[in-house]
Image 1 (cartoon, helix red, strand yellow):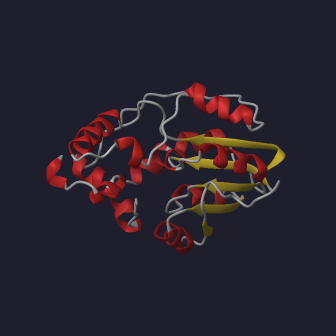
Image 2 (cartoon, rainbow, N blue to C red):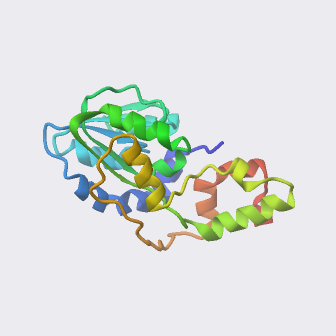
Length: 211
């Protein structure tokens, strides 16, 4: 199971939220709008939306990250993204760097569609096909040596444009813009720090010395 240390994340992975700023611009939130931030993390981007005068509900599956968001004064709740309970109440659903952690993609999309008002919009960024390929290949090689199939423990969903667009349209969305954007991202620290933040789930199977 992936776990999150909110302070460690804030100290070493702030670039994730910073890279989400163009998506926030695409969202173009306006004062008075009610917006759901799906997979809000520690709430750093949620706070920017709220500061524009929006009524924001922030949800994430990590209690640690939600506590950090609450400490920012946000309306934040622990919630499974595949079991959203909302019905026809949001002007927009926003998500940054989170949907690739939600393996039940159809359940997530269906919940987002139900949560939106009739003229609502869904604006999101997440890992797509080919994302962190060098890391997933290394994981596959190491786990295979231990008789473990990577596909059986893989916590990520990195779809192609065609895959995700088809899912969106099947659940009722009209897709205006969707694209796979290459984004090589220099790390502020070495790869071991990235692994400790985003890949600590693999410690159940392999030790750091095996990389």
